[in-house]
Length: 311
Ligand code: NCD
Image (cartoon, rainbow, N blue to C red; front, side, top):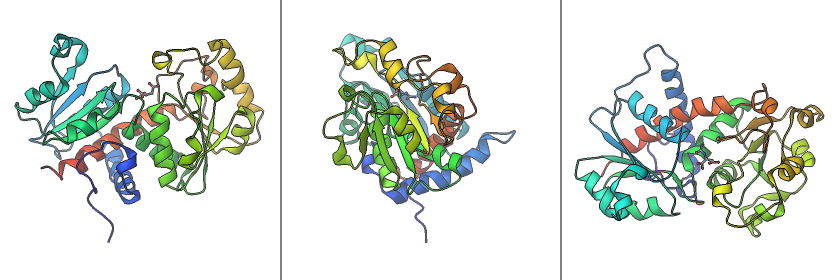
């Protein structure tokens, strides 16, 4: 019999999930993807459940995606953003969250600049916690929607597939969660970017490293291209964005010169003209907008599965 419950009450990182958890999330997301393409997109699965979206760091896609997922499951939703809250007046994270919880919140979706913040909270409060990105650590829902989108685009499992991740691996929580998820699913993972933006001991996670963009594109079935995280870089890791683009940017001309039809992905926000040119982002090799659509289905699946495991 296949598993019908997650092995954990919280989604803190991909590191803590089993392969069976990932497959259960994908199977459930497939059903919700069907629901959100119906004329009536709403189901009552989370009726009487209150979800707080606590965003201590900027976000567009992830925040809207979670809010839509919650509303399509009929949850009651409260939104909090640190820039307009008492955090600015010196309140601690635990005090802020405990105050919100005393208003009877069942689930917390949290984005925070400090790595480990969602793990810290999960040990102190009774609500289910979903990590929506913690500093440079993990961004599990992004990795799940990425791997789910890859499977749908290839119409196949990821076992034995060649997936390349390009860009600022050093500062990217999306890269970390992607690596954990893709390795658990049996894919071959290669990282490509300037040596200064690839962590020294990363091969210990079972991935290859290449500094040659053309060879990496020739090798891969899918290129997941990441943004240069300038806001997290306190020193200069490469001379200029123009130089970065010349060596590591992906253009349509480069893709057209390959024999293999690489599928291109990006978690957003895109810096057009830096890691990708517009003609790649908008081409039919790109599945960037499918990722966004699948993100709602994946988040509905996670919210639903965790809601069945309340304390
Ligand atoms: C990513 C993030 O915030 O980590 N974006 C996202 O969630 N869609 C990637 C990024 O900021 O580059």
